[in-house]
Image 1 (cartoon, protein in one colour):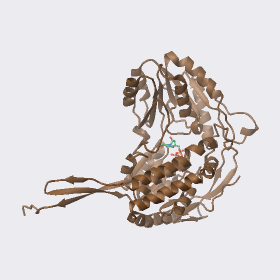
Image 2 (cartoon, helix red, strand yellow):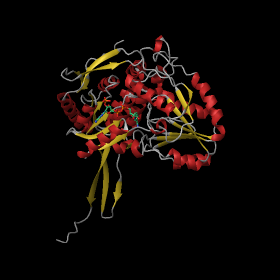
Image 3 (cartoon, helix red, strand yellow):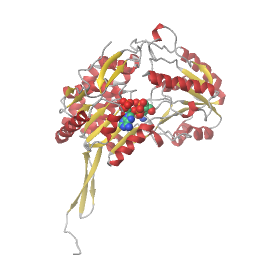
Image 4 (cartoon, helix red, strand yellow):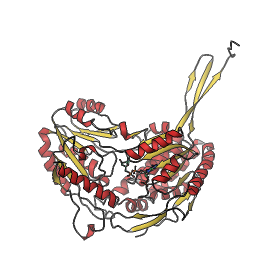
Length: 487
Ligand code: NDP
């Protein structure tokens, strides 16, 4: 199985190669096959991409907003028309089940392009009356934005960054994770087909050093990173040195609270979606599931029953629910957490191992895993695992659970299940998280802002809120009378 792109990078409207860059392989996680070999960007490639983006940005910003909107809408249409092929590539790039990629990746990218196209055409400032003067504000682009992506949602991350950036009149240079280098290249092709100026959206490949070089490039005015908290700290500090704008979408260890009056089937469905979707490799996952004591045993029994029915296997089979993890390194990291969970006294309810059989031999599979009897101090309750591992904790009172749920340095997301409407809003108001779901989990429509508090990040993607992070205000003060000067 091969998915070799024409060349490693896409710059100024065409594929570009520079074999002087270190070669790295793209591996299909389900079989271990090498599906593409690419080269990391050299300094010359980085400069070329930044120069192309800088040129294109000036042209793009001079277009009428409605013309820019048209390009974004066309790109969305092309993505939708090619959803099947793009979803297959996403599955090869990540190992995620095709059942998911067909509905959650390219299609979410198209949604964001379409939605921000509408915003592009309606960007405006305000007018402030000041007696014998008035002022007006204009929303201006930042310039060249750098996007750096994680490996769990390569198409979606590229689109969620490109859509608001381009809508506001910026250009972008995007660096995918070196583990998922393929999907962003297709997006770059699509922008050209949709009529974007050459150089408006460029893709350069590489590891962290390429990301670091982009974040500190003299032409970079903004860095938007999706990644882990430690990488976020480094990129934020590097960007600060040049007074660059940032958006940081980082990791989490989010709480999902199930009160004893909750609809049990819904709560279990939410907990499973919030732990096993994308083989658990979702930043906003509700990996600490707090269940009120009165319903704990019932919850665990039914959760185990439903988890046992999850179909794990070939991600290209439409019947498969759960594919492999992204890489051998991630697989081993998750298995080490499972071992730690057992060693620290958590009770394994289901899973915890590697599925047996020929079909799984070469892939990086792990069974969907549930631990019960987890306490707040255990490693599996404190650290982000990024795999299909759910920790179930129990609680007595609302007061107690809010305090424990907030007892983490992370603050990306939170969820709660209850039929008590007052309690639902009261608890949502007290949970320290950037997004809180009531009686559902992990829904991220592009219309609503997404992002974290505390160490989980800065800024917001999606929704009108994202506009503020991809543009800056200019204020124009207009005098209507004489200049009153004492000199
Ligand atoms: P990493 O932080 O390891 O990497 C993220 C990206 O940053 C990669 O492209 C990486 O390159 C690059 N990078 C690494 N070091 C540097 C550096 N010093 N300067 C600039 N760029 C650098 O994250 P993962 O790829 O492992 O993704 C998993 C993490 O992402 C999890 O913590 C998860 O929670 C988080 N995440 C957050 C989301 C959110 O929206 N809040 C959504 C999805 C994931 P390379 O890997 O190629 O070396």
